[in-house]
Length: 486
Image 1: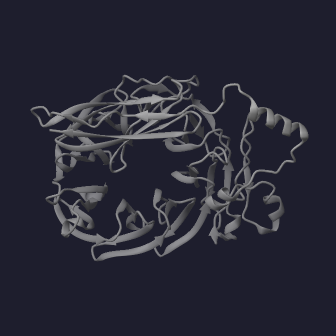
Image 2: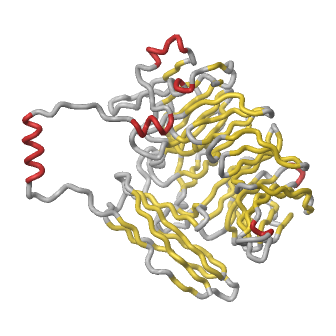
Image 3: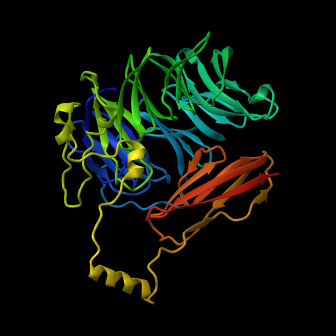
């Protein structure tokens, strides 16, 4: 298999996102910490644990609970449970575009904040001059400076549709992927549309739901839920690569496109696959820093501990390697007494196989599933301890039951504008008051909030919401609620 050399930095907690910060990158850890990585030295903390950062402007950090923090503060930060939380943040030309839980879209600079438009459901794309969003009226493009509507597309079909991906391209063009809600007939098809200057240029049907669209250096590209990466032209659709699993992140290198799927990152040229690297976690974020490609991701369990930061050398030659050797670069986990993580650099060479295997992370999920703990011989003393533990009548140390409840399904009445404000609240039992994380989502899987309570504005109709809650010890609980607005 063709691959590139990879270096690895161990992290004390898995990183789930990255922000650009001049000549460095900020890594967002699962506990809300920020680490700065300059491409050469070990990542260093620049913000303490707390509500998850969603964006950074200069030295100001904008967090999911609506609070703000300053880079350099390493103390624990408290969550603002009564504040208006943020759902999405996008950085554009020295400013931020933010979408809050109420549906207000704002343009934020260090000097001012102003509402661009309200009633927004999803922020789909943003650049220095415009934003593309989804609302009750359908898809709308607004001028970022004035808020004026530049283009709109009403919802298609008598039964409606789901917009699965959309992006703006040069010269005011818009790429849209849709899925009809009808059970049969023409409305049920999955399609990609291309609009220019308010007119539909072309439309292509596809057999799988399209989850991503981008105008890249190798052409207009889409990826679907099966993991296929496709090139789109006015004449039709052609396959570039089958990643075998849904693409979770994508970055354009200029003449080459990188896509992350399953435990791998693939480099794609116009004619297909060029190289592959493997990460011990499923990559969730990619970023280019100079001639380095940065990779972070989580394997979804706690068997192997925090996953490292992978750094691919984009200037090195592509070389051949056995697929089983692709994780030879992975550094051992950080020990508690380690003060500074050490860089581990193993070039792709089978001549140093013995040294490379002194410690190696599992290659993909299958190895992780088949790992076994070291065997230990039981002594008579251990047998006595086990018998005592089994017959002891003292209270058990088994973890308490952990549950979350959203209450009964509800019916509410809309106001004169056809919209109802609904407060969703959760009841959590069997968990401490701190360290619990929340993830609210809609029926189609879109995440809309990360606090214990959520204020939503709903049009008339039926709406379903789900809440997943994570206990500090790693357990999960989930519940759903149906809201009918009359």
